[in-house]
Image (cartoon, rainbow, N blue to C red):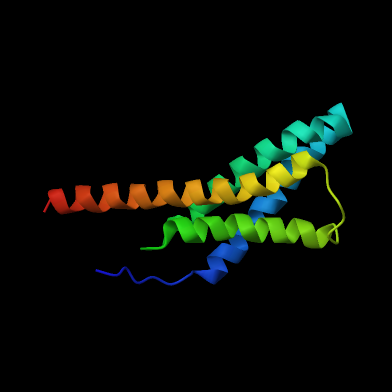
Length: 127
């Protein structure tokens, strides 16, 4: 059986935008309090966490393609950052942060899909 699904572009775009906006909201205070060096640690962690959370949000209302839609949240967030910086060279920690955005998004999609499966199984069991 071939699973058919569609990409939920509007939710993916909004989720990626909000994830990247959230990264800035988390790391700007770190920059102001602790300086530029602290961003090398804060940016990757914030990137992973925000993309994970917004991929969960995207996965709440879809029925399939959870991991793909989640990974796309991370890709959109990465592309937004690259566009904002006009593709300038970045420290290695920021490149790692971009990879973590995609991994975080995919992981969020995976968790959303498993939650959906558990919810549908529990609903079927009560019938």
